[in-house]
Amino acid sequence: MAQCAWPEVEARLQAGAIAVLPVGAGAKEHGHHLPLDTDFTQAEWLARALVERLPVAVWPTLSYGYYPVFVQYPGSISLSPSTFEMLAREIVTGILHTGARHVALLNTGISTIKPLQAALAGVESGRATLINVYAGPAFTAAVQAVEEQPFGGHADEIETSIMLAIAPERVDMSRAVAADKHIERGMFNRLDPKGPNYSPSGVNGDATLATRAKGERLLAAMLDDVLAVMATLA
Image (cartoon, rainbow, N blue to C red; front, side, top):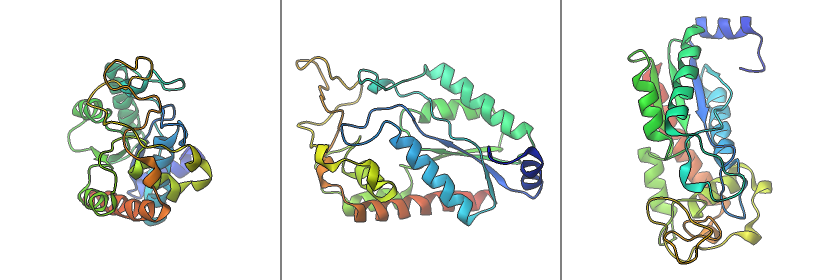
């Protein structure tokens, strides 16, 4: 919508278009082989896919959020949960104020789920929906079908495969690695080899097992989940 003049925005919303707010980190580590804007790239891809299929009005991607476990890696930025919650609520409220009947948030993060839920709790009931794209049933089934890594969770086989399907020119598989051990819940640690969750690469899983074919299957499933939710909002 940022490329449109306001009368076009008004016309689309008056015609019943659902407003879409993609949420994806633009500054968050994803190992040595993936760019900092990996989440952002996924959110933008999903938004474009919706534009091709549905009468939607897409707002610019919210690229800063609550990503606290990655801040030891240069380039990674996290807002506080309260700041992110307030920011998301004010954006959603502003979109509704422009005349949107409903806002769908496409969330590509995990740590962002709770603050976004809290943000929407403060929005007029029934007028905003949070879609956590990594939690849908079709996507979960696709992960189970293609995954070969013994454990994963970040910049791994799954996420790298998705990026190979979206933007292969931005993936450097020569620098992809398999993590030695699973990162437990909490802060990733790149500074203290004797401390918990030590990860010099920032990878949780085995990125070397990624393929474009897996990514295409995963993306198709992810999009199916999103479309299924969007159908309930029509």
